[in-house]
Each structure stands twice: as structure tokens, then as C-alpha cells.
Image: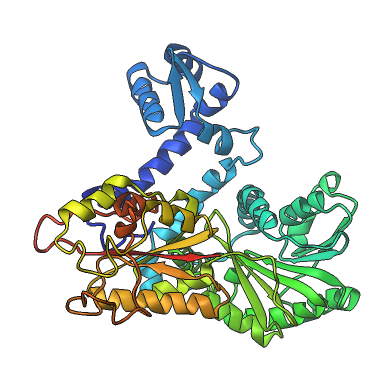
Length: 507
């Protein structure tokens, strides 16, 4: 969750302070048997209470809540699992996250002691475990990570394209091999090598391993053990995968690991670092603290920090792929850039680091021109006809919609006063996009043109800076911003938050 400067709502505060309650609700819906019972078919409230042996009054209130929040659905007096519950809470779903919910309370123990770590340092909460405790926690951890990987591996391999028909993929820190198994199911002519600790590899059921997947037990941080893997597969890998592994280690550990493991990769191969990044979104920043309270030296890195480590390991090119569940994949190469990336992550990062407080990628097809917006410019604005960036001098609705049809991607940005600074930053963003290879880059501003105190009636004195505002082309900026998660409201008081919204079109 990211609190924007424009969000001053009490509802957001309530969401933040009570979020743990929904976890408790989901957990109890599982442990009470409600999810499992409804997974078998429909029930009435009375039937469900009888089967689960919940108290009548208390159980009814709990079931009402489950319906209210969308974990259950109710039609004609019958209860059903919602689509969300069927996907993430059902035992039979391929995307089930039941073990993630089971493991989370173990992690919460350390989160409650965040202050201790902040005062005494990382690693303070890590304690020696008995063999039995270690094995139990490892089993819980592996089950939870496997379920999470079942979802995220599909996102990753949906995004990594343009691959040869045959090849070798090596996964460093592979866990039980979920990422490899999904990849090999899609690319059956490839071979896979999974490297992880002996305890982890030993937990893999042999019957579940495809013939083209081999497990190579080793401690990847032990240079001698990893050297054995390198000696066997040196320069043979077409893809080298580091998925959710770099965040476990310090820079002093990751640097040598990337350098040594990089010897496994063919000269024209891809090294993929799939992880949560501190500067990508609020989830990545939160994950950084997750590592702080639960590991000796782990952390979420920024994209720049990771790129620097990759460069030191001999990978001079990298491309960033944003994935739906808020992780990123950095695809690194030695010689030439990887061509199969269409993400606007670099543009978003530039926008956020240069004064915009929000930057959201969207499909231009979502943008609509409405007659009423243009009419309000004509009949409700004192600047009508006085600015070269406003009606009637700008394109009409039809022209705007035709222009949008020439583009496949766009970036909506939000910023704060002064307006002149906002428009300067928009022009810089357009220039950065153009120099970055987006030859069709074009911005639409927020608010009237401000390059002159008042416009010359005969001509514009700054045509190189003049850009139309979204409103002047009939765009409902309020609705567009809200659809992108940027709250906008009319100014009612002199101290209300002022924000401007602009658009960058690219292709």
C-alpha cells in the first residue's frame, strides 16, 4: 500500500491499523473448516453451522462477515465459495495459498519485535534452533514458498519470451524446483539443473521430478561446493536464474555469488534476477524490513544496486520486467540487450525521482474523450480562447481519440504546484522518453499553459514548449486518475491539497 500525498482519508488510516484483522478472518475461515466444507458444494447457513459445530449466534455473525468481505457468496439462501476463495483458499486450486497463511504467524513473532531490531541491529532476533525445530520450520517454510512460487513462476515465464527451442536452464537457490518445473513444462526440449542445500533437495519427491530436471545439492555460498557445479556446467547455461535468493544475502555475499555463478552462463545467455526491489513499490520496501527482522543480513535491493552488482559480474546490460504480484525480473546480458521487454519501469522511476509523486502505466485505450468536459472548457472557464494550449486552439474529441489510437502505452503522472515546475518536469519526461528510444513520445499537460503571463493573440511565442492539457481535449481527468489509483477531489478550501495530472504517450 502506498499513501499518496493527496490521500488524507480516515478510511486509509483505518485500513492500515486494522489490516491484521482480515488475516485473522481468513485464517479462521480455514481452521474452522468453512472453506473445506463449501469447497465440496453449496450449504445453507444452518447446514454449515451444523457441520462446523460453530455456536449458532457467533457463527452466524462470522458467516455474515465472510459474505460481506467477499470470501463467501450467498444466493437464494445458499452459501458458496467466492472466486477469490476458490483461487487462493481451496485445497484443490493450483494457486492455493493455505500454507502461506499457516506460515505467516511464525513470521509475525519477529515483526512484533521490529523495535528491538531497529535499536539493537539486524540479526538480534535470530536464535539457534534444535534439529527438530529447524526441520519443522524448514518444512513450513518450503510449503509456503512453494505455494507462492506456483503463482509467481507463471508470471515470470509469461514475461520472459523470445527463447530458443532447446537449451539449459540452471536455477541457483531453486528450492523444490517450482520455477524450473513450470519452465520445463512450457519448454519440454530444455534441460534444467536445480541447485540448493542438501536438506532442501532431499525433501523433493522423486516421482514429481521430470526426466529433464536434475537436482545438484550444494551450499551456493560455499565457494568450493559451487565450484563443483561450475566445473560440471561451465558456460553451458542459456538461462541462469536467481529467483527470490539475492534478498537473503548481503552485498558482500551476493557480489561473489553472482560472479562465480555467472561462469555457468554461455556468452549470449540470460541471467535473470527475480525478486522484490526496494524502490519498485511499497511492497518491495516493506519486504526489506521483512528481511531485516527475519534474517542475519538479507535485504531488498534497489534496481540500481542490483544492476551495479550485475555489472561487476560482467553483465553490462539489463532490462526490467514488472510482474503482476509486484516483483520484478532483471534480465541481464553480457553483449547485447535482451529485446523481449516492453516495461515502462525506467520511465516510471525517472518520473518518481524527478518530483512526481505518482506514475502509473496504463493502456491508452482506457482514455476517453467526453463532450461534457470540452463543454465546461467552452462555457465555464475564463481562459477559453485566451490560451494557445486551450480550446478552441487544441485538437477536438475526434482528433484526440484518433491520436490515442496511434499509441499502445501511456504513463499517467501526478505532481504538485507550482504549475510551471510541473510542466517543466513533463517536458523533461518527454525528452527522456524520446532519448530512451520512444520516438513517438508526447505529453499532455495539466492546467493551462503558463509560459507567458498572457498569450499573444496572433501567435504562440513558445511552440516548442506548448502542449495541450488533457482537459482541453475532453478527457475526464478525475475519472482517469481515480481509475489509476490516484485520488482527486475538487478544491473546497484554500488549504486543500492541490495536484496536477499529466500524461505521457509512448509506443
